[in-house]
Length: 293
Image (cartoon, rainbow, N blue to C red):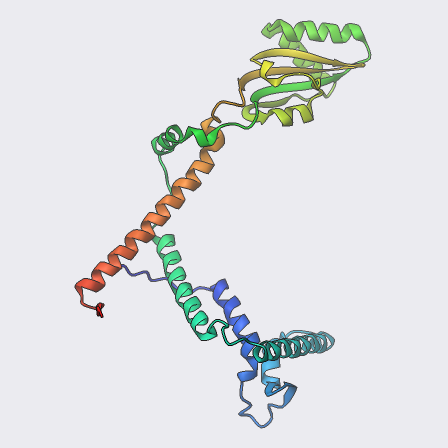
């Protein structure tokens, strides 16, 4: 039999439900203590001091306690009034509230059990082979929406045209020695190079960060270097890798999505297996029977 045991812990969901039940049924509290005086009434429902005391923090200042008490009493009365009117105007064909509450209780109990089972039993690790296999089997769902690039770039603000031309010549040459001179020149003037070669940048993001011409088709941004000139300035862009918007997204871009999909499938399978197993055990133990009419 599948059994899940957990050490006691605070269940936030249970607290919320208990709070809701307390708010709706707080009037059910009886004043066994003669000193437990009533503080409010709404129709036949009575709110007692002992009920109110439970919602006032012990360390609250006197003025804060008074404000909290007034706010709670007002909210309680308003809720009871709406509840009374709703009960009075409830149609005959309205759903059976007791049945709804019981159905909700059953669902909640099952949900909490299954969550505990998942927390204890679910294996959340995936091998690179599993991720690769899913990626290859479902590439249609990973198609890019726009072009992406791995690139680095920087902007030079320089009024001297000759300096910009010299920088452009060295940058476009592809010569490592000349590129080193460019990097030294940039460092001396505090110009940083934005390096996105380890990650992918979308075409729209690239347009937002660089002064690319509006008419420039990003599909022409194949690997290589180019310079976009402005007045007294220029953008220097080096594209290391380019992916067309109609091609599948690189696996590193969608790996986390794949993990989420695989994890959800594994979770559903674990729950389905548990349900089948406990049902089989119940049948074998003759704990369940069907009485066919």
